[in-house]
Image (tube, rainbow, N blue to C red; front, side):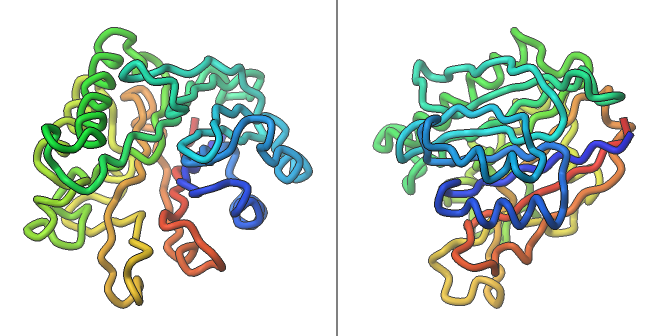
Length: 270
């Protein structure tokens, strides 16, 4: 059975529900995980997606900020959300596929890691301190809860581009939030202590450059191509042999009123 899982920081699901609909129609993932939905649960555009056959939807949102959602045409059981750093700020949700054929039993964790602000100093920037604390608690989660045991997937905007070729210039980005050494070490620490496999880099190894985000600030993002790989898909070791392909929809950055992130798809033969 081919299982197609996608992740996308949509930067307001109500503003961009039409783009999500277009993506679902064109690419038909089995499961789409959204981040930064910026929408309270009672305002989520459920009907837009259910009319396309995506009848199974889990949402964890709040007004104006953050928020995560799982949109699926495969049945699942919601496994809840975990609050990190003592904040119930809608940054995690998980589901387990049920009655979904060979995909049954696959658990999917959808994360939106804090961006961290602009100054990479936790002493003067509370947002950066929060980000580092969140990554530390993700490591604790991996050690204590062992989420990678069995068949499991982590997806989301993890807001760190951890490898040299995950950014347009390693040298110029080392002091920029999302690619500082402390962030990279902490995210790779989550990957390692959880025994996760980086699906995108398994399928597209370094030194090939891979980006999923381009700033709104660039006058011509495509010509400048100053991208970062902030959006990730990790799989448990049990699923590593199931990896069958991936796609990063760079063209979505040119859609009308786009997100600054583009969808990332991973295909698994389960």
